[in-house]
Amino acid sequence: MTSFQDYLEPFQTESIRANGEFESSEMGSIIQSSFDPDQPAQIALFSVEEERGSLANAGTAAGAKEIRKYLYDLKKGDFTYHIVDLGSLKPGDQLSDTYFACKEVVKELLRHNCIPLLIGGSQDITLAVYMAYVELEQTVNLLEIAAKFALGNADLPTNSENYLSKVLLHQPNVLFNYSHLAYQSYFTDQKELKLLEDLHFDLHRLGIIKEDIRKAEPLLRNADFLTFNTNALSQAYFPSHLAGSPNGLNGEEACQLARYAGMSDKLSAIGFYEYNPSVDERGVSAHLIAQMIWYFMEGFYNRKSDFPACNKHDYTRYTVAVDEGKQEMVFYKSPKSDRWWMEVPYKNKYKNRYQRHLLLPCDYEDYKTAMENEIPESWLLTQQKLK
Image (cartoon, rainbow, N blue to C red):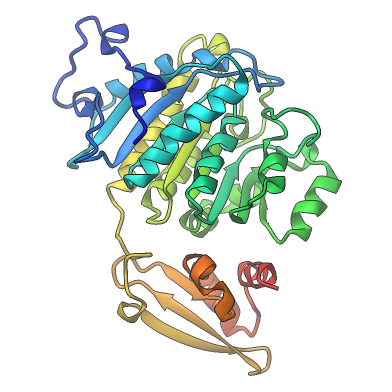
């Protein structure tokens, strides 16, 4: 078993509150400071004080204390919380040492069915989280929320702008699907866009998400692992990214996405990256991330346990004939949450490895699309991955 003390320095609440104590109504009163493997927490927060992989946002390593200051001060909801703050993961002698330590911590938490909630640091830390899934031999769906793709130059050492290339090229590869929300076209290399499209990944522009935020919910419900780069946020709402943009998500949209992520029964890890306290004069950005984390936790405590824990026989089943009756699509509706899934047919050879990814989250609009004799795009993309 990994000893967290080998990698993490405990967080001292006295650094954000004079006496280190919090009122019973505040989040700080319910966040524990030690991990009990016999009764593991449901969510484990820890920060990664690493920025050597940052190419355009130096200063991110020092941000976690500011975020904690606002998070601990927020009012708790009407839930029985079981959350632990493991403290700060200090940078190793080499960047690879930090990745290794982060991977070991995440891997141990996943083994205990405890959600790692990371506060970065630069976004290349995502690679370390992915490596934990690799070592656990768990096939995953990765979802990234960011203004641009992090493919970069794969020949360079891992950094915040090429980490995705390292994920795609790593062997063994446990990535089943990659989804990207809120990319901005004027930051997008068309060759990179075509490469990701050719790999049948789910790519959604900022305008599509802002048009109807609810379209993001099935994508988040399908993710095992969410990485959130704060460059996806408009500078008007989040001024604390040196490479930020006037356009992007607003605060309410970001919190809604975080809540969707929390409500996903499938999601098992999440990270928030690239907050830079050096340009956060009034704490606006730290406060927003704290609220996003609060909404993630609120979503988590509103989970319905309807997938993958629920037996398919408990769902309402709908069968739709498409392609002029040549093919049938099967939809399921949860009796607990009224959420929808659609089944993607697969060969027996994929059963053990991909079964949990082939009951695909969708919405009522996808069902209506099928009723109009059209096959939903996400269904097609998933089937193409199996060819």
